[in-house]
Length: 154
Image 1: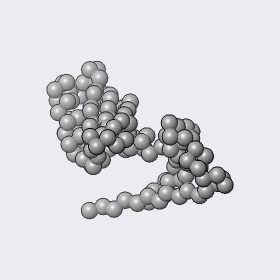
Image 2: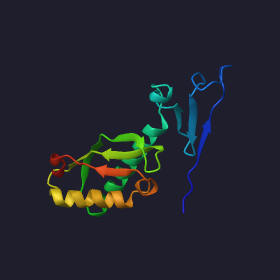
Image 3: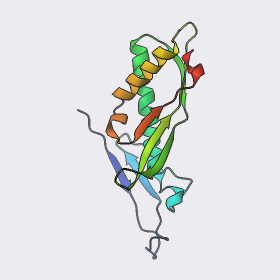
């Protein structure tokens, strides 16, 4: 088992602590020493120049899927030269009527090394295996869709 840590720090910066006026800016520091200037999403009175928790969740899902996919490719000796993803999360109401990230769409585009042949069906199976083995995807309730472009097969 592994343990991961994060520390979130916020300090009141205004006298007015009403809902419309308190500052949402804060800092998140991870056990690795990395830091992020964070805030609420702009729709919830946050600072659009800072990372928000919903973006962080979408990024975590995208990153985890990529890392799992690369591990699968490496174990199969299928050399990957590049991988990009234009991930998108949707905030909506869940089954209980509560606001939640209800869907995340990953759009991974994979470029294999010259001479590496992976057909569309094999690529789809690799993405399915990556999703099924991604720690973050297995930790969330949101529907995670993977929509690789057709040209990603080669």
